Amino acid sequence: DRVIVMMGSGAEAVGDTAAYLNARGEKVGVVKVHLFRPFSVEHFIQALPPTVKAVAVLDRCKEPGSAGEPLYQDIATAISEARFGALQGRVAGIRALVGGRYGLSSKEFTPAMIKAVFDELKKDTPKNHFTVGINDDVTFTSLAFDPAFDIEPAETVRAMFWGLGADGTVGANKNSIKIIGEETDNFAQGYFVYDSKKSGARTVSHLRFGPKPIRAPYLIAKANFIGVHQFGFFERYNVLETAAQGAVVLVNSP
Image (cartoon, rainbow, N blue to C red):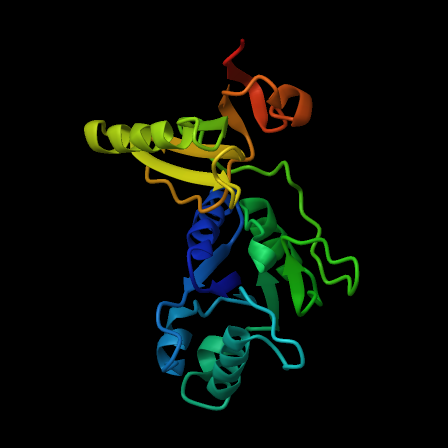
């Protein structure tokens, strides 16, 4: 009865979050748009379940001065046209259509934020033109979310490695991902966060691997393994901020 419509890699996270919530009694879903223009109204309406009551369209852009972002405008037009055509029966139950923005300024788009959008759609009058991921303290469009909300399965190993550019940390982790992905039955993923200076700057490697496909296009929030390759980081950074309960910490000490 609640659907998010969006494009891009964030739709993978929405799909996983929807499956997690549906297993716990919710009735939510996602429509992934693979071809934006030319836009097919008929194919989109057919993809919407006839039981849907509220729709949120997410764009990863902000167009100041427009009535709404590009995908939102096309979806609004498609639903409006369907109400007066042969497909009106499939959209008759829609009571709310809202647009939102995510990933602005390269901010994360996590299951916690996705759940906040689904929760917003439960309301009689959900907020339109909202933002998730950034704290909008100017126009106050942000949706509040619980950062502790986590859907990653326990069997997925989540490891973070802190190092300095050119110390070998990123290269070693890329090799680990290749070995795990090619030589074992596990699925593997790696994200690497480093400064534009690269050599001598801080690097943080985010590695996931486990027996099931990994659809998590966001950084690790709860790590069960943390490697700190530079002892001085303990004085400068909160390297254990993302440590899960019972995490293993490997310290390269002098």
